[in-house]
Length: 498
Image (cartoon, rainbow, N blue to C red; front, side, top):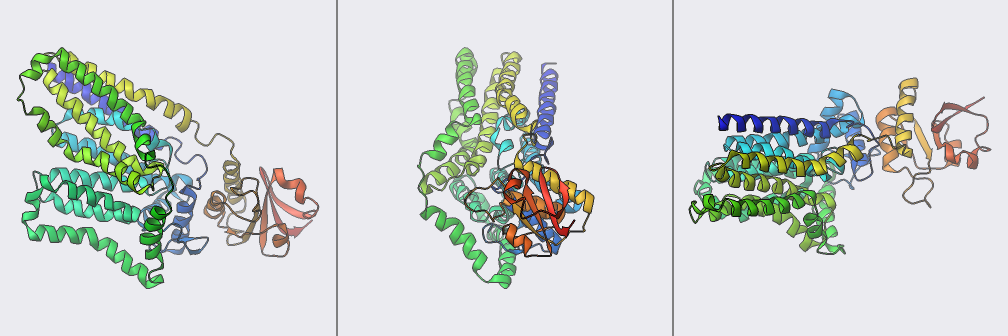
């Protein structure tokens, strides 16, 4: 009877938090403009590849893009999304949101496969508490990181399962290769963790055939892409990927080595870990009899069982601390590892406490849910629900581009477009299109974004001019008599005269 009650309770937790996770991933996913870091670039890359029927060569403003030097797998997923849903911010972000949902479900499935039902339920709550994953550069962004972390996590779970079934080495190799196709050299972290885990998976290396096939599975897709890319531009992109992306970043690093460490130790999931650790110690003292009855080696067994998840949490943070090349989203994978660690710790304690009292299992689960909701509720309230409602100039521009496309269709497709805007990173540069503007101009209206001023527009008969209304007074005399195609947050002028 007790087990039936607990199972129903855990199923309820799982259903509630998977529902919350889906809400956090997909609610208002397409709202808000595509930001420069680095959504606007990637969405534009994918749009141009989609338009040209190209799956290999990423371009930006129709020139080969060496700023985004990553392999194209995530861009290809955006292309598929554009084909399914139409070109939009939602479609650009959908692969990342889907990656977040799959990551949660597959880790839950891993726990269920291991018959750790308590861990499965609580992981679904803990992952929701990692607010950074839902607010910037990850699950809700047109970025590479969500799908990369999905393959990263699947490679880690494959490593763990290799302890009992060495043939999971094949999946480890495959997921390593797919992670490379998302983020390039960042996938080296998966290889480093694999090396550190070798003492636990020695038997997997007894078969030369298994090792060779696993290496081929890891290498075949990246090598095929490199060969195809080499045929286009030689070593230029590969040099940007392996030298510019890695060496230049490390060589030019000037940040504090402690930055990734302090960020990790102040993350929401680490705060929950500390709270759970304290609760666990208290429960162990309260139920000392139960823990004394355990084998003396049970703590050692716990540590060994979680060795992979410990090094998974530590290695990315330590690596970027040593190289001083850290960005906020580089340690997201460590937060996922911490969710698994906490879920395993709770499962370890609760299974033993249940010998005396099932109430402990329920109380610990309720405390964990409460701790998660402390971070979940503000995330939903302050970020997800109001997404795109802030009246940002690029939000207004995006709405204007959608309205322009709805009114004129493809009449101005392929036309040169000049922009006079007030939102510029470098205010001294007047004639530059910021990526936030390029993305909606191309994606919704198929305009050609051309750097230039009003004078360039006036001398280019096959063009239109888009001007922020706040800047109108500066150019009203020069534009007097030109037909206004649209009068919203931005004026759109043609060369036709009244």
